[in-house]
Every structure is written in C-alpha cells, then in structure tokens.
Amino acid sequence: MCSRALGTLVLIIAAQLTGCAAFRSYDTELQQTNQQLASGNVDGALLLLEKHNTGDDKDLLYYFEKGELLRSKGDLAGSQLAWGRADQTVIAWEDAVKLDSGKYLAQFGSYLVNDKVRRYEGYDYEKVMLTTQMALNRLAENDFDGARTDIKRTHEREAVIAELRDKQYLKSEDDARSQGMAFQYKDLKGYPVATLDAPEVINLKNSYQSAFSHYLAGFVYEALGEKDLAAPGYRQAAELRPNTPLLDHALLDLDAAGSKNTATDGSDVLLVVQTGLAPARDSIRIPLPLPIDNNLVITTLSFPVVKADNSTPLFNQVGVDGQPVNLTSLNSTTAMSRRALRDDMPGILLRTTVRAISRGVAQKKLNEVNPLAGLAVGIASAVTENADTRTWRTLPDHTLVARMRLKPGAHEVTLPSSLGGTHVQLNIDRPYQVVTLRAIGNQVFTSGLAAQVIPSTLPQAVALNTP
Image (cartoon, rainbow, N blue to C red; front, side, top):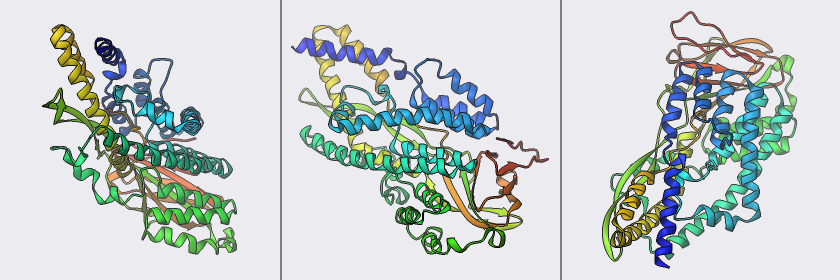
C-alpha cells in the first residue's frame, strides 16, 4: 500500500511537470502584450495573445484578454463575441456549483494538485466585472435593453458566488482544524502582509461586489424608466462605498428624474473613465518549518502576491467644454484582487503546506529504497511548486465616473497633460447616455457612437478608434 501511494504521488508530480501550465509564465506573456497595448499598438498586442495561445482548447483567460483588446481597438462586435465565449464558461461553472457545491469544493480543495496546473476558472471579481464590461460595450452603442440583460446576469452571479464562498470559508476552517494547521498568512516572515491588510482592502465588503457595477445598474434602470429597480442599485452602491456624495445624491435625485426635459434641461450623461491595468500576481518564496516524519524541516514554499500596475498616471479631474469636472472613483481592481487573495490565503496556505508535507514524507521514503526516484521527486517539486500567477491583466484598474447634464450636440473632454492633454469629442443625442474612455500609459482609447479621440499634433501618439 505504501509503495502504491508513493507511486501515485510520483505520477501526479510527473504529470504536473509535463503539463505546459507548470512552466508557463503568464505574467511575462501579459507584460509583453500590455507593453504593446500601452504604446497604442493594439494589433501587436492581439498578435502576441494569439502567439501565446496556439492550441484549439482556448482557456477562459484568452477570451478575457481578447475581449478587452478588441474593445480597445474599437471592435465592439468582436469584443462581445470573445466575452460571450468567456461568459459561457463562467455560466458552466455556475451550473456546476449550483448542481453540487460540495463536490466542487472537494475537487477545488484537493491537496495534491498545484493551483497553477488547475484549469483557470477566474477570480470572483473577474466573473462579475465580465458582465459589467459587456454592459459598457452595449451602452457604447446606446443599447440599454441589452445592458439591462448583462446587469441582471451580474446580480444573479453575485448571489451564486456569495452562497459558494460562505460554504468554502466554513470548509477551509474545518479542514485547517482537522489537519492541525496553525499557520496564518500573517505568520509568513517576509510576506508583504501590509498589502492585504491595507484599509482600502479590508474596508471592502467582499472581493466581487463593485460600487461601480451597482451604480451603473441604477443608471441603466433609471434610463429605462424602472425607478423601482434603479433605487436598489444606487442604494447598494452607496453601501459598498459609503460617504460618497455622487452615490448619496443618486437616490435623492431619482424622484426628480421624470420631470427632466431633454430640450431644456439637456441630456443625463454618465462619463466613465477606466484607467490603468489590473495588477499582476507574482510568486514569493517563504521558508516554513513543517512537520515531516516527526521532524521539523525548514521547507521553502511559494505563495502568491499582488503587484499593482503603475503604468498609468492617477488623475481625478477632466475638462468638459473648458470647465473642470471632478471624477469619483467607484472601483479599484487592485483592491478587489488583494481582497480576493486575502480571503483565499487560508486555503492556499493549507493546500501548499499539506502538499509539501506529503511530498517530503514521500521523498524521504523513496530515498530509503531508491535514491534516484527520491531525487526525481525533489526536482519535480522544485519546478512545479510555484504560486499561480494567472489573472486577467488587461482588465482596467480604476473606474471613475462623472454625471453631468449636457445639451444635445458636440462637446469636448480634455484629459490631463500626463495623458498628453488628449481631447475627445462627444456627440450627445439621447436623454440618457453613457460614454466610456480608456486610458493606458499615455494612450486614450474610445469606442462606440458618442466619443472620438481628436487627432493630436503633440509628439505623443494617441490611439484613435472608431466603431
């Protein structure tokens, strides 16, 4: 029995070694892709994405990234097609969770399988932001009914995630007790604990609910005349980001919305500015004393860390027709990613340490009977035991908004000098309108019917995208 168990473990490790995921550096791939994107070369970024994903069985991350790149290019139809494929994958995940959440949690919590060789299922905030970004695509074409469908799916997805995570956290606590695991991530010497305990992280209600997503829901329902649904959206946004005047006023202004006249009062315009890139995940090695065969052995293990992207200058104001307009921040992907990692760390710590102990025991016994086999296990362990660094990297980091009343017709938005002083022309022709701008590095991308970057004579190249 012992030799059979050891053989099984060796086969598992060998399978991990032969799988391409064991050697793939997703962070390196996306650094190259994002460098092209930040320079305005979206086609170059798309070519790199295809180069790194040559197989027929494309994973969820491929469709995440492709949808965002096509959106930056202005190809909304192609973006929706890619994100539609991603959404089908997430829906299949939801169906599996709803069918048997216990079975799903048991499979996901397996101790012998390294996280980085699992099929990527997406972090909770990515699943929710997917349908939010799809709604923005539809709103760029003034399709409020289509955006309503995406928003409804976002709410349903949040409910599935909430129920699953409640069960998962309880299971993690029970598993830790049963394994006698006393370590916490705060005990990891050399780990950047402050990044997970920062106020902007611990003040989040969870890792997947976004004040922006719920505020956008309220705006869409209001535009469609569904005030009874708009109010909960605004209220939820205010609860997720308290003491935010824009959110506090949304409910107060809702009752007066029906009396607005577009011809005299102007259009209700929501300007959405999405900046930067989602943070990367890196792997950090930490030595831990582990009980292996009744001895404490110092073992170096790998754990994930979140590294913020600093490629895009932060700003909170734009000019509209020559007048300064303040932007309100409603979402930080970096904060959500760190909150997701903070919540996942107990499970990651448990799986990593139990796997290391199992391998240590197996290697010791193999050394006694076959030193070469023990060496093979040791080499396999060193290669495969790295943290999972996969994450949706082209997703915008910050989402800021401004709500304005603008007369129908042409208007001009001016971005800060740090973005080349880019000018964007708006065409307002609806009672309610959503305009989205995307800033990466010193590039500004637009898409849809209502916004177009004005070509600049400045040395900095500006990306001009038309639908």
